[in-house]
Image (tube, rainbow over all chains, first blue to last red; front, side, top):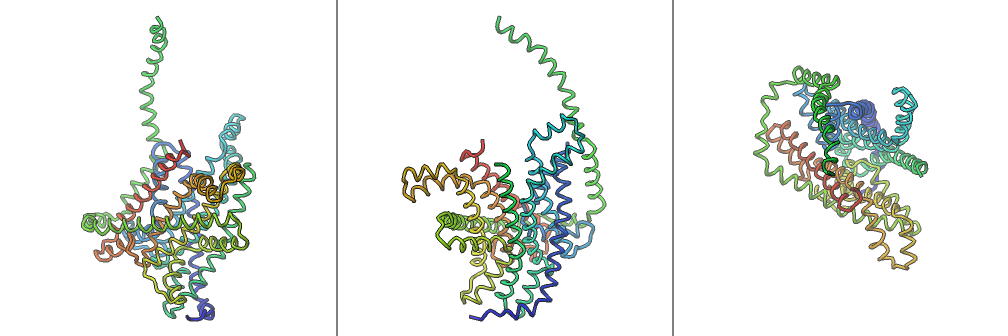
Length: 221
Length: 276
């Protein structure tokens, strides 16, 4: 058995830092774009009529039902069909993750809006509250409170999914760890370090989600 | 007499209904042609016309998929088997862990909680590399890709399932626990005949969601080339250099498996009477 060599991890910190930057780019960009896409898809499904809700529902079902790895490879390879240029692996990963997160978030938002008791909306409308204020001061604040745990869950999932971008060659944390470990064969040390790192990001998030869930349960009792 | 009085008032209402038939059709048409839909259709048509490289689309040959239908089907079966196996073993482990948690045996609780949190809060891809490349260095036992892949999937699913099982057990009404102790039921009867059947019923919807997410997660085993759908389709698309066709079909296969899982979960839920 080889002894656990922390110095190897410390020596490769600069490379891991580059990886961390790419991971952060992936997470924040896809969360931002995903929120936008999710909001549009959710509103299209709830408020639109005709083809629009059907289209949004199809988008949600398809992008939630395809594994993230397959989605990334698919967009990476299908890029040339759209516009004729092969996307860089970072762009492909960003597009895939934004679409995936958007699909997840549209369901979360929809669940939150539908969870607002019907009586609240009816009361506001019958009191003659303008439709804009029905949304901004009755529906959305209540919906937001309900979806906080799910939102944190989606953010945590995005962090986990970002590691998959290494499979199409984005130099994120997992990719860098793999390269360094391949050179020195210190897989155990490096992946333990990377795992601990992810744990320190994800564990507080899941604890926070649990706290909010408990708060909600207390209020609804 | 009675019949005529019954049909009497119905006559005009029928007429009204018939006369409303036409506006109904019109409303449907108008609903199909409202402004956002028209904008959406025009946007999609424009995108199709200007951005898509039709010369490359014309070269696509989905016939290649038919040529490789046998390995693809076998690989899809392997994916289902690996997921199902990991899920079944994970369910047993998870329920066991949840029971141990509920028994509150001293410090064991902290160990189990740490286990659950560690597996739940690290990405599967890191776990895969850690088990496949990291662990053999320490233990000296080298595992094949299939073994490490299934092991990672099983351990992760056991952690998620333990969490779900814990919530399910706690959701069994207090009265059931009290009744079981009031009747002085032995621990085995209490758990296997009173608590667990009800807890499992409560657990079905989150179990279905988890099954879908593990089916998706199993595609990640392609990183270690385990021999399931993702590995095989990556190999075929490398060999034939037709990745677009193969990846599209692979994505559709995964989508079909996921939709099937969702449908079956819904049926199971209805069957056990949780939903009408």
